[in-house]
Figure 1: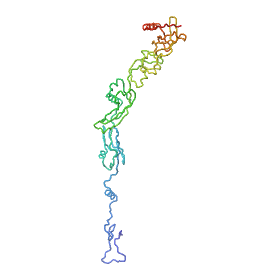
Figure 2 (figure 1 turned 90 degrees about the vertical axis):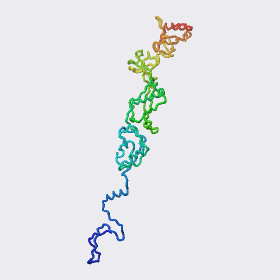
Figure 3 (figure 1 turned 135 degrees about the vertical axis):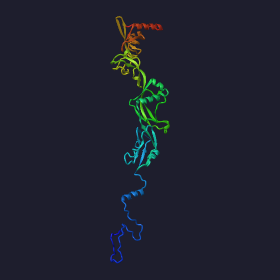
Figure 4 (figure 1 turned 90 degrees about the horizontal axis):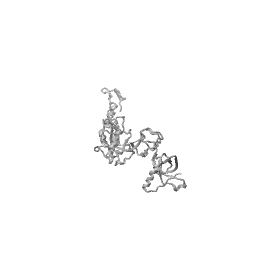
Length: 394
């Protein structure tokens, strides 16, 4: 019962009697009713203190927030300090960088494996945050602190090819090249680089191909068949072959002479058939060719001057007389070369036709029958016992 604050109080209808003192006010905020015990007096402490004490009493040991980590199997990081946010995704972080910015390694040069249990034990419950759970069994941290350019990769590839059966002989007849912009990032230590090559070097034929390069742990530090990374390296294999090269600028239509070209060993791809081979003398240049350029089937006449079965105008010369008859080439040949031909007489003179004559090619449509060639032919026929047929041209 709430007390009214009077200095003295006399029940109604009762006068003060001598020797009887009035009831004085007891300075309590809450009175204890008759017959009821155990009522406590109101606490005059500040309300914020009461709230703080109640939190400590009823929720002991509770952190302000909890977070979780999601790990990947492998993660590549740049050279330098490695932080928690570099290797895991943080879920439940209240303040940006508070958890993800925790430093794990100051300077990591070789790959390092961290298990989930080890990570949880290391972080634990420090400060107001609590690591609630780690998802994933662990992660490989791969620091990329070294760069390999095209020259480094080419030297490594040649070394591994040389170790293959027939690898040493391959470089006598072939050349290997990488694109100049080829470059990769690898750890500075603790790894080995292995190209996935065929079993024998003879399988590496001329042309372009892609060869995988695996980054593997050193055997002593390996955990199973772990492959840290796999890079696809594009290479080109060229065949070493002698080809004709122009010694000076040649115009269109020029006929090749011995001083117009020389033979050089060049590195050719698998389209080597497009390079002109064989006898090039007296062949016509089909397109303007610069000095130092290879002769190909597109800029030099590949077909011989006279083809087999081609019709020719056969010229028979005597002092003061020139005869022309039709003939057929029995063999392909170049200008200046002597080839066998068959003379085509009119139908009435078929019985007087000869089997073959030797004539010298003058150009693509004309050959010349010379007396000296006829004498050589006659001597050859007599030595072989064959009957000689006289030639008469009217």
